[in-house]
Image 1 (spheres, helix red, strand yellow):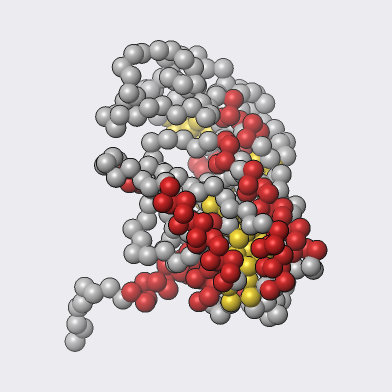
Image 2 (cartoon, one colour; image 1 turned 180 degrees about the vertical axis):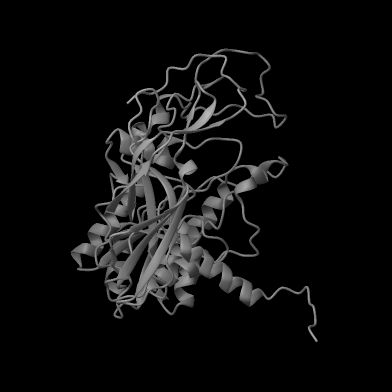
Length: 446
């Protein structure tokens, strides 16, 4: 007879949380630094976020964590030694800074506001040289919090602070001169600038904000217990102004909020991009813009490395009515077991009256864990209606007749194979003609 208990299995829940977080961890760069070699025993952990790991954001972006495993604790739990002298310096600095920056407990909305991140601590030359001599590898954690009621900033947020740049460059230089590796961990909630500094570290791991077991999850990836298989759901641009929406977004403007649903002042004004914003990028959002306008990026949409390699065989298409199934065989051609995310993009035929992006993601699927030499057949399913674009003049979702290109690949830029799909008849699904804009908008044109 089954006996019901409402007492949670904390150990099982922790393991599920730990494994789930690793699915989204993304390997952005790796020059033979990861997974750690067997010779790596002692690790120098730099960056205040290494000891103050961010499990989630604030307000609606928070997670109900019972605890947060720091990166240092996660590494120790995996069997690595942490540079205790370096750790002591960071913990003292964090305690001193927290004492100076106590939160305003009188504000009942404080829990919803993003926490103030501490200024990055850059150890002096003596501390750095001692860490190089006594450890086998360096980890540098860069952290970003997120929350409600205000937008992000460019300086010290999207762009790294001066001290963060100094820390990455100084640590990488010192460890490289000693023939040792340096790895950057990004414990962040959104995109940051990477193009100006990504050449310095030997590897970059994007951990996002991985929940209460975050330190353990990242350690599993670093040591090779887990082969990273996450892919970017966004594009990392070279610089902020490369993003189409930057032309209109009220960057570095923070309204005063009275938490009553309006700004603190009742006076109405008409200042563009402060009081109102026109979304002039139209359909060219994210990778659709970068791909369509051939803009250089730091890391493309759908990107993510692995500790192994995969081969994509020529895909096959099967069509029954308007339903299409694309089958592609994925083979692990490397020496390490791992998963791959197969992506299907579609490039539509030209329409002189309606703008189309260069390609759009229509389906994706992750393989099981493939052993070296193992092959899995992956199926990606779409309907012809999935190829539709919205035509404002017709108030309808329209699938044009013509030849569509089906692109299978490992990212929006790494396309492996192309198939052709012919749509014989134009399809249109009418919608209600409502919510029309009262203002003419000068939308972005290719």
